[in-house]
Image 1 (cartoon, helix red, strand yellow):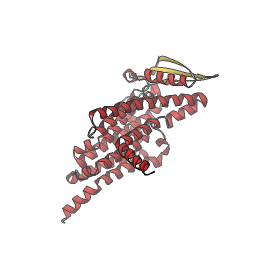
Image 2: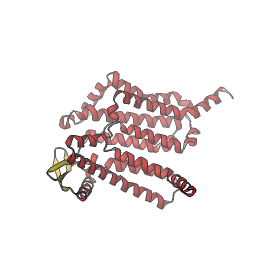
Image 3: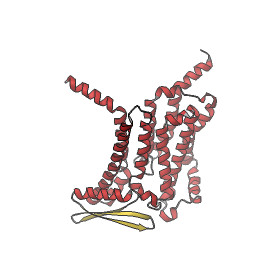
Image 4: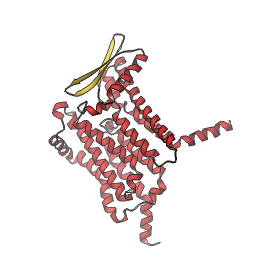
Length: 337
């Protein structure tokens, strides 16, 4: 076998591993430098873990097709450069002072930190831009390595990372209820949560509010002599969860051999589950706020609330992909006993 064939064979077998390493490396650096940022989901870095999971699941489902689709021998240098962009960006912002440039850029293009607080320029904007860098780099890399087949093959991972980046950017420049159109699910979600809280024995008050943060829904929960109130805006109403879920489920079932009726059933059941999961998350936050306190409710909201959706979508997609196999194996085990 000549050198060119040996090189081509090595590239075919190692391309996926190389991509994984190049995208896990910057995430590992970020985790080492700031592990606390991986305890949060909204405007933080836990979504990177879910992105890697989607990436790995797509590889597992179509490994042989990816292995035979490598086309980047002639543009290997461009692919390597694209892969290294996230690592260079992370190192530059962490050690080389690029974070100051990022901050000034945010101020110059209108991040509303003077209105809503420095968090939006110090945290929200840098994280949002970081996700845009990662999303752009990953998309470019798979195109360079696999051609446009890479867009189709990794569509779920690409959709997830871009959706996350876009929602974070929206929250950076138009937080709370500033974009009224994004509030469409807020009243329904909040009132549904209120009904469940009432079934649990609490008293509730639901009312619309409108102030400098835009329109929102105020929910007050009362139990005994205690009460807890919070305004609900689109980031907490499940808009992001429903959009990301819709993309994920459609991408995962589009090439399957399932009947149209079964596909529709999967989409509808998953959407209902996503909506119910978000309501349960809101109910839990208000119960924590009422029973324990405002600080604990805030911690739960920031650290653990979004994990409800992540857990749900992972379990649901695993059931779709491996559900039949799990049922068949369970039947065999029960028959043996």
